[in-house]
Image (tube, rainbow over all chains, first blue to last red; front, side):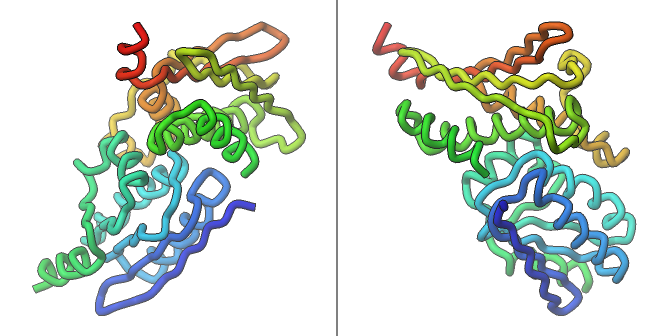
Length: 118
Length: 131
């Protein structure tokens, strides 16, 4: 079995999703479930911390694309952080940096949400 | 995943850089995912055959299936904004494969099998010095 884990923690008005392991066609449904849960709970400020994400394929990227519109409609956003160069390369090849905010560090993304709130 | 390990070992033995090895593994993953999804429509009992042909100048992976033929010319380059607006997800894998490899070819033997060839050449530097 492919090793993939999602850890969810809530901060002040921001939900942080930590991804660990391999995000591919096998494991993408797990991430989908996590986003569905966020939408159900009306949590629209989402930071995805990719520090421990070792691999991503287009199936994983597709999940971010499927949910960002609903989240933005509700005045929220998906911000991505802490990517390894290998993982960033895949996001970059598909043009993600134009449409998604990508930060080096989780705290930067959290701060950005707080600035918008003010 | 066994396929990843198989490709990883062969690509490393060929002498590719970490980055190239990662790119090749991803391209093979995308090709297999497309076969499972489109050619076999998730039927779990179907087979995918993967053969690797290393040569002096290039590293070639051939992936075979006997499912529904796939026409890659119908795949347009992805427009991310359009994908997001319409919640579309298709086409990303084929586009990625083309970006990650030097050459992607599709061959169909009607009624028999489909073949995807993924080719990566040795880095430009060594190709030039070897010329």
